[in-house]
Length: 365
Ligand SMILES: Cc1cc2nc3c(=O)[nH]c(=O)nc-3n(C[C@H](O)[C@H](O)[C@H](O)COP(=O)(O)O)c2cc1C
Image 1 (cartoon, rainbow, N blue to C red):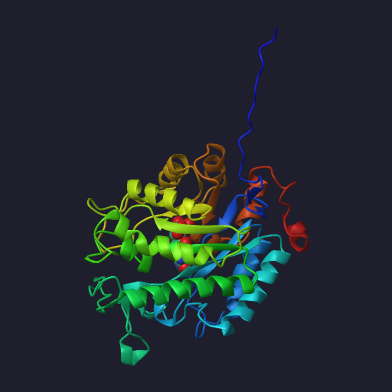
Image 2: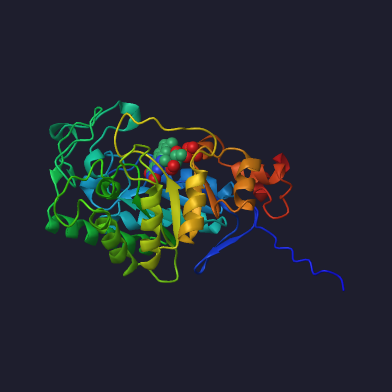
């Protein structure tokens, strides 16, 4: 008798990926990137062209930048928002165009906590005074971030926490009304949810601080509030800073456990980033430096993950998928350099049959 050979084909970068009722045409996503180009939270033509051209460039998923769930949750005065119905239609224009060009439109919803009220990056460092275009900030406690972000936030009381959790849910409803089919909760980078998670930041003594159970309460309750309004058939995802890169801080083992808890709450994928809780941290930045975090959460929490961070080469991205380190790769700065990165990668990897260049541009490929 001949031995049976069982060949399990691992997916590759240009294989589709299905999560809930949504199928991405490939495993390449545009990582959320603030453009600081909105007015009163309203997306502009910049967002249409910026996000639209990356859909034309072949991305499977285009995630719009951190959209603030409340005005004081904006990082800068130029952030996109989802705290008002007036934000819906300009974003709907973006999501329609992205979908017409074969990509799935996603959006991240966020609250910047104590890091809010900052200048746009090209206008210098630091926070804006309340009388100079800025606003009062909030956080788990009345301790500033430091390093130029020196505004003392107001410590949220339980009523304030509940108000913001309702704001996350209302923003999720508006995201759906704007045609987005993929929602990401921003629980990373030292913004509000991460401020609750990290023992380096959260010094509360009530049921939102102290033990692991208490520090994750804000994120778990917020997820529950959003899942209750976000359609069951659409992916709900969360971005974590999987580690603070500081001994005694938030770390990968806590991130794995939070992933398990959020999976039970109906989160479908974890987008694995790192850092941002406190200033002055030495982060071992290098090609694919956060990929092991995505791999560990994928393996130990048994859920889909996205890898992000210095993924720039087609072969590198393909290997991450083929080796099962993550289900998706998200690129940020490389997509700013090349809106057509997926189409170029398809040519390099011999996949133009599945991802041809845009017909209008075919003669140039
Ligand atoms: C201009 C810019 C804006 C960003 N805005 C966001 C954001 O809105 N939300 C977020 O989670 N990360 C944001 N990031 C981080 C990226 O999504 C990404 O995680 C990071 O840049 C690492 O990926 P890369 O090495 O491919 O750039 C931003 C990064 C850049 C460069």
